[in-house]
Picture: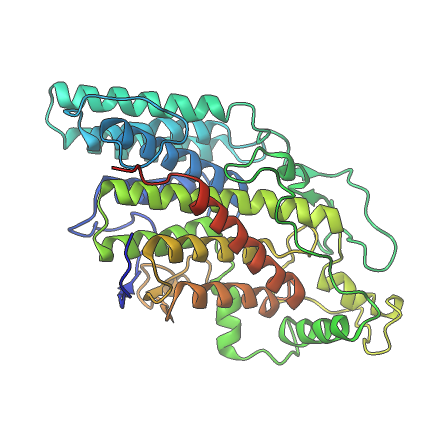
Length: 443
């Protein structure tokens, strides 16, 4: 835990491990990168399924954390409360814990993703694991490290074996609303469906239950604040004819990327620049990814509790909202196709709030300056690692979370109320993770 104010200028100019590692990268950093690379290979990232992606990262990093703390206990374990020989190889333990969880989690990716994607994800992990073990000298230390890594993976996989993440992500029978303000299936997606309705019932990692920090309701349709929000997203989020600037368009598309992918990238490079050791990194990524995973669980509960319509429906059907300050545009379209689940609160904003709060708490300051890239910009050369790679600059973790949130207005997905409530929701989740889990052991 650092008490001084950091002034780190970080250049995050690559995606997960598609390129040379930093000279001072360690096994935890490496396997964070490997997990992201595997998620991309398995087709769940950079945008297809952040729900299973967040769960996979959380489980893998908890196994890594517990394996290291079985060798030398510096932080309280999560699933495996055990002791391994001090001579056990930490690198072998980290690699095996991550490998075993990632392989299992990839096999649990739901139907709808081609088997070829699962095969590619598995192959990515196996290649990285073979290379990691080859770099460790054979002997008792390596064998002991593998054993404790396997035990840690088995413990978290057993704990999560009946967590509810195996339910279908798409519900084609979900009853659409009909009254003003009630959510409808996303226009243009045929057949229509409700996404991740069951994710609210997945067992949380740090929350007591998915309702714990549920924010208050959206604005009343007839109020002035609702009209201000609708007119804002109608103008800034329009695909054609709006008032969005070129930079705001870039922001909108930049942050479409999976939150677990993007925030782990920021955390990984921040930790490397600060010089965290294996144990500190294991705790950081364990806390970060538990908060991100529970962010999705909490937001899905909130979304389907309020079942509030998205801007695309609200703007097209504004003549039904009884608000004299709104005007319908039946042909209005957002910059990109709206995700097929309700508006309130913004899941992306919850994720940003949770991640920034964990990073702020673990680093002991919010004042960390960095630049980062994205894999969802429309021009391939502008994505991470491209010849014309776009890097956006931030003065703090909170600065990034705020831009991440407002991007959902620029892309036409959310009302500002959903964004602001989502960021606060996420901060509560981040604080709970740090306050109650993976605490330092008193010496």
